[in-house]
Length: 63
Image (cartoon, rainbow, N blue to C red):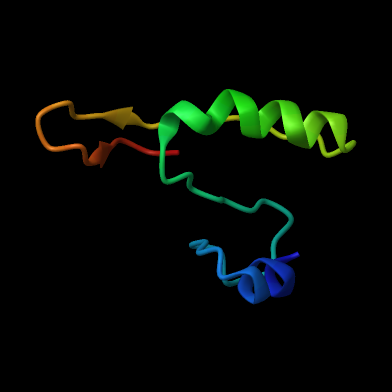
């Protein structure tokens, strides 16, 4: 999976090939749509939205 994400140009913090893969979304508003797409494709995920600072737009907390 990590090789495929790399070919697509999708950044992820995972480098150790464990089965848990973090794929941050550029726009948190896309979370619901991404989850629906993955579900329909038979890919079952746990969503972990980060908390966003409205003033800076930067994520805070853990995913």
